[in-house]
Image 1 (tube, helix red, strand yellow):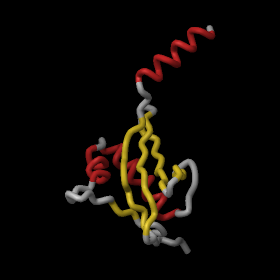
Image 2 (cartoon, helix red, strand yellow):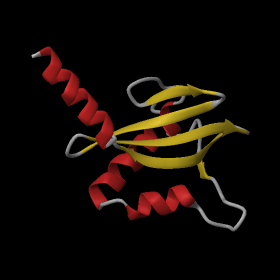
Image 3 (tube, one colour):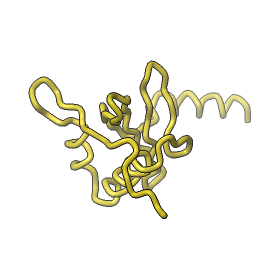
Image 4 (cartoon, one colour):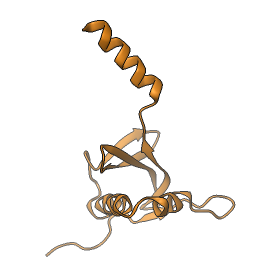
Length: 112
């Protein structure tokens, strides 16, 4: 029989002003990205404990849900565990800073 119970239910962090920043961030994503991030959060909720590539520890009690989006983009949702729940603290799209790309290209030119 398939276990359909959430092992680690997700809850959104609520700011002192009553906002839900991770929920707002997810809702601002394009529909396909929103669906991908939501499914990846669900994988952790139903599959806990779960490791890479879906989830990874960051240290200091923080974990990340890892999502691969279209166009080689990567999303992360950082959470911690309290009272048997994953508290979603922060969500973002990983970006490579332009200065890092420029440095890598400069070094590539030095080698070739």
